[in-house]
Image (tube, rainbow over all chains, first blue to last red; front, top):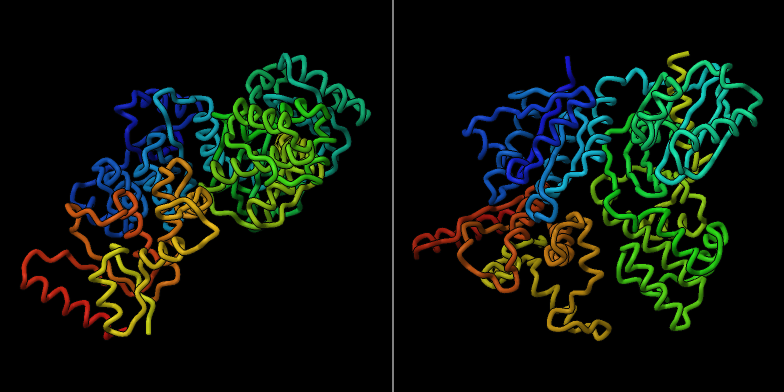
Length: 407
Length: 145
């Protein structure tokens, strides 16, 4: 039977996005259900939750959450959707999530949509929900066994990792151009380092944007979205497979904040509409200053982020601010520090507001190698940030680890 | 003496009643007055800065209007340090000073309920009799603290 995802929403019917939501669910083998609520429980629900919105639809949204928490309706997971930039919707969405997490053990994700629904992002969220419901056994794996290959086809870079008997023995990293060719090169490098041939590999796991294409090309045993894979890879490498943790994953083009319990994500939020909170912003900033990214990160450590003001987080306008500051005589160190602070602030403001941070906080993805970013993130969120081993290979390691289930 | 959060947070009637019964009212005008007198801040007339709106992220996501978050940055900490609260409802038709945005009112009421402190919720009185009962209930509540 398909995984049933309860839709708690306001505005989807009028925004014309409902068919997209249903299509995304169908693609990951899930079914959208609208929990039935009796009109009599609407006021009761608002009273129980403690929130009484003006919008009748948002009252129904809360009533649906109440119905799930009190057994009037059933589902395997829940997705809470409201229109982007609706103040009441954003407040209710966040509190309905909190209410469901406090009163049920359902995995919950939230999403604010525009009329141009980003179906790929929604798909990743739905896929993660389905994985959490259907494949808990898969995610429970704590040791890598046999000889496995993990490939992470990211938007900017493609990573491959060969693992044997719970150890990483080969890595490959290339810029993503053509998805298949980039993956082949990354795999070739990882295999060369490991001293094996592709035929020796016992199981393959793929993740990232190009996962479906690579899954077919390599005949992979595991094709999995990056939210669950990256969080598993992180707690494995960070040696925190039990209890709670938070994973902040900032890649080339998007970012994710995930809370994990016993290695299984239970809440997450994704950026992606804007490249301002990604490695791309740092690359453009480093390019403008005229240094490579590694040097840029070290420069940032020496600078004062307050000395240069970036009024916009936008990758275009933010860089424009940076250019203006440099033209006015700002130090490159300060400009680099300000750029890192800008990315950290955007992650804080856009992603971390939607989850309740649990320590330890792990920082992974290519940007975690930029020293200034780690410091900026620590300054902004006010807790120590841990960068585990192989932070840029986290998705590939997670995929290689989980692929062990098929050895 | 208990610290009592009042809602609407700039209600002079509630502020006065709480003080008369020997408690400390946690109200918005007191917070604002601190800022107006702070020589370091200069964004008149209320001296709420963009940093305040960012601090409001503790209570509401970034897509909530910054004005709501700025208000929450001032009001939220008052709720957190309150030992009790008095919430007056049924005042939608009235404009209470700067609190124009009803989303803030909704959320503040919600935060108070979540706080797990003794809360007296009352309807705004519409007649003299109701007003007398209103004051009596507040008196009884404040005396019980």
